[in-house]
Image (cartoon, rainbow, N blue to C red; front, side):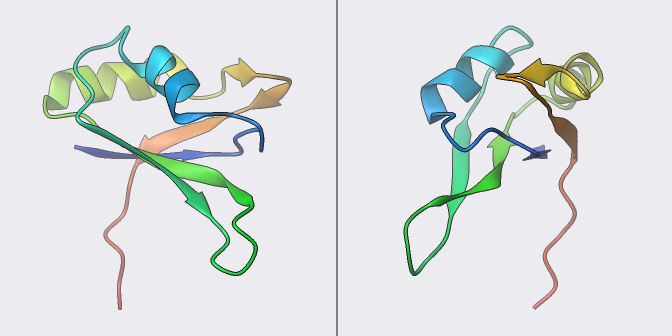
Length: 82
């Protein structure tokens, strides 16, 4: 299941995000989105978890949690329309 994580602090790393999610289960991939022109973080990313029940537990457990002073938004990622 692909999970959207928004309102992330700009200084967060993939390792820090991994630490948050592995407490709920296996994480297969983490992607932090950056600006193509500047390479600067855009404040959101995606976490992929292979087990739906673990992903749902992570969403429930982490949505609204304060990370480095910011309340993160965690929910099921919507399919990107091209």
